[in-house]
Length: 289
Image (cartoon, rainbow, N blue to C red):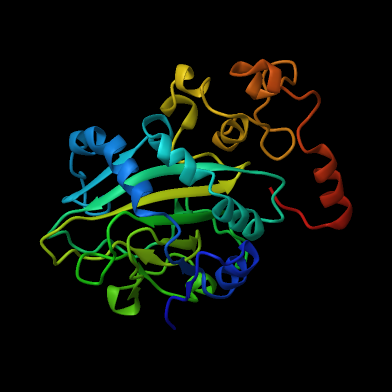
């Protein structure tokens, strides 16, 4: 099974359909070259200052630079891209709400070995989520072309239904090759890993991941994004960062206050968040976050 490619004109519903079937899909040409150039210029000081990884999983010749919302205005555009957010909400449609899970530039240097094949949802303490239940939805925006030679992410389409905690080799995978500006979508249950970089150039991608809002974020957005930066962000992005009640009751401040009140009091909402949506889920039995 190969990774299916879709045009930038595709719909969130189509992306969801393929993610449910295969666990991964590529949308070609979603970011314009000038948008990528702006992002790289904004992030260059941070990328240059990032040390190489400390272990085989992180990559000893790989740099992983986070904090993208705080450091890059262009990253904020990518985080809130309508097609991406729409597809995530389609995939996690039974969740009352979602939030940003992590942001990271992954720059795989020449000579890097292949990353062990894994599921990203293992970050949740290896909790055995039921087959077919997705905890998160991930994206990797290609800053450079992704080729088999330079370490394109390796995936196993259809592996969302495999048993958990399998130890799989690279021979079971295929490279998710794509041109710069394209986006790889993949679910938290997909077996995958960074490829070996056998080229003489860095393979760079922007990893932006979303999760059900009752799950803890991998990148702590409240500490990563300084308060003075958060005050300059618009309300939808603040909500995505986590300045909202997760599900309908999680994360409120003291006397049931809306967390966004800590940043922007005029955007505060009274009562518990998404309570009516939660009631509907309870009655329908759909469950969710």
